[in-house]
Image 1 (tube, helix red, strand yellow):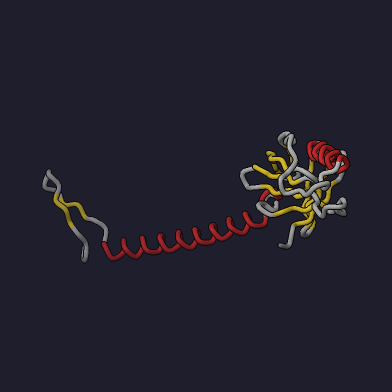
Image 2 (spheres, one colour):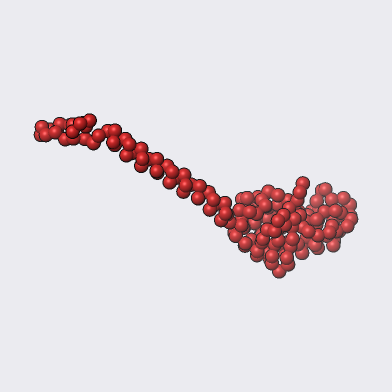
Length: 172
């Protein structure tokens, strides 16, 4: 056998090994095809992941979601919902602010707000936190607790439940 290696066994018989040049060429072909296949599969996996991303991945986390409503005079404040990716949230109501927990999955949402604080906010001026506004705070919390679904339309988050609440992603 030309260009081949021979090894001697303990029992003095010769054993021929494969031709190293042919072996390297064969291994190179297999390795080359495997890397091409891996590259194609990796690309397909990335495409599928981006196309099939769950709606919960599209939720505007860490952005102020401003309730689409006219302010209650004399203040200009309207409710704002801000949700972190870990589910912690802040709800700035008509008068007061509360922390909350938000659970998202596909089109379902569950909002569990904390209790309303007893005292009035320091930043509110005299007469801004009227009984009407404090009542609206309680109504808004009740509506948020009843929310069961959500959807994103452009820059608008629509919360669906007993009352439909429309929030716009703040542009500042």
